[in-house]
Image 1 (cartoon, one colour):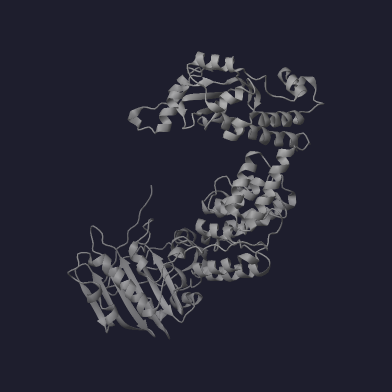
Image 2: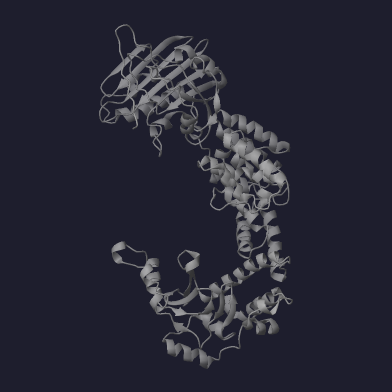
Length: 635
């Protein structure tokens, strides 16, 4: 603020001249206000400066020394017209008065100590009585200068409130900050007004801002996205075209989805295929109606709207696929195949290596934002990876290569014993099969008549998209996600199975899965208040069980010759007070080391995988045996 206090006049003269130049000289007299005649003629929105004597007299009347930025402003102009778009006259020395809650708003902003208010709440609650009112004429907007909210430089905060904005008062750190914001508001509103009138709002300020937008575009392509984002944010505050569409691309890759619209790019025939799918995918993934994506089509041609319908259909049914030209496009296809089977970290490494080869489809395109809408690759673009993407020079630009973001998948299997914040892996079961591709698993252990892979989806969504046949039987089929479990291994995994493990009925799917190879089957259930936990492991080869063991809180049972590395008596010692939880971790660590296998935490928790319904994991009742089923009937 020091610069502004030292040069109020240059700032105010620039504002006045830009405002005057923006007025329509041919506007009919009925559309002009009498108060505007003088500033149009003189090209000055202010008034003569206030003398030191007038300023001191005001301070004596108020009982306060005025804050620095307001005091120095008055010494240049004793009041101001058109502070932004909704305050038509700001007070000079003769019109400043105490507000004394003249608006009757204090009761709506209480700071009762019983409610544990923040310091900001207390300041705002008391502001209405003590503040000075600076607005003289406005569109129901109050501009209040608060002597109770003072910073180290002696500046008083300004609060601006309008009931029609349906939001709390907006706070500015000082009067100078408020005036700078109102200057930006004037620019932003004038851009729209000029466009509506078929004119263009152009001056030295707009030309400088537009140059900064272009420089920011090149900065982003060169990996300097943080600097570019700050420049674009300033240009947005002035209403400059292009700035929002460019900055929204940065925001979306950083994981910021709120109010990301790409500002008209979704309605442009060149850019719509890249950008429209992104908000559409957000709608679908958050279970909102797909037609809401049409809000991004203002001004679109019939051709674009027709193409939009197809994009929305693909996004809605999960068949949308992001594509790109050249080497980066080929990397996308390779990465998608890896992500399809759960190897998200390898998929990201492929994309990351190809980023320098990415090319924009036009001058408003900064990065492969469309990746975010791809059902397989989109989940891989975490905020951390989005930062890495933005920091990587591309499109022929040069710059420093960023430090790679950390992998998302831990090695091995032990992470299963940690649970997760959503608690969806407290129980699980899986089959690992050696030397068999994931796509082959339905043919080995798929449910009769249903041995096909479903389209990739999340674990939980798969249960609603691919429900069972609905018949009540003894069968305990698994809707299993499939993928690769490390070099040479595939997996079929079910989280939170409905069925419970019972050795009397259990039939390992590994028996069928291991024809001509090996298979490992694991079933884990946590302890409950009414039953102990269980951990089962069995290894089969060529359709025959080689060894197995089942561990409960009070017993260990086993069959066959269990290798020393997997000895349950070593992994689940009796004298360990935490034997169950630690034992599961030890067993998973030993299993991963013994067979060189892993499971992809990210793909199972947040990604999308193919799934299929397995054969039952238990046997049918024998002669004289019965079973009980439970159901809920809704009235």
